Amino acid sequence: MTYAISLRPDSGPSQAVDGVWRRLAAAGVADDMLALNYGPHVTLAVYDELDENEAAAVIKNIATRYSSPLVSISSLGIFPAEKSVLWAGPTPDKTLLELHADLHRELAAKCHPHYLPGAWVPHFTLAGYLTSSALAEALAMLAPAWQTVSGRFVRLELVSFPPVEVLQGAQFTG
Image (cartoon, rainbow, N blue to C red; front, side, top):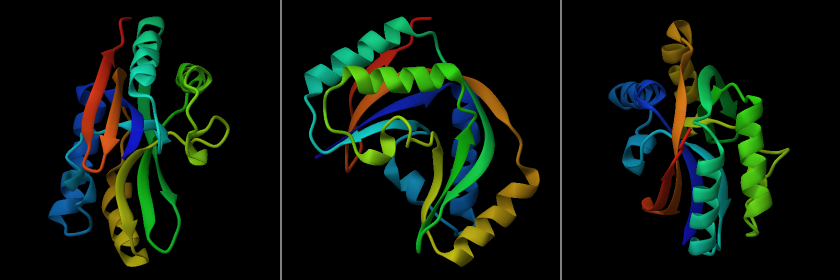
């Protein structure tokens, strides 16, 4: 089993990302994010092994110490590969980076290297496993009308996957 800790946004960013997922699926470009059956999120960490009780305590502690972090989805990006990932990037503000670093300081488990402080790229995945032609189609469809959308992250969640199952969650108290 694999575990992840993610941030969930309020309705503004959530509806915007979900809308992109639905447009990409309707156009036949990609439906992998809808098939995931887990709403829009930014993954803070991924683990192959994890003490669920320790992780739950850490996310509850962090949620009580931070106010709901602002999120402004301001860019599109690509993790290039033979099968690329298209993503929407929130502007990484100081609070988001501090929260991410605190999580990694407080949770002793061995995290996948792409999610460690200094390597992590905060993002909402829009589609994965895109061929170069599907990526070009997705960008042609999304880029001309792209608009920044803002809101707040309202919840931290501990999930296992696949399939995605929410194990624990904590609302930000501020």
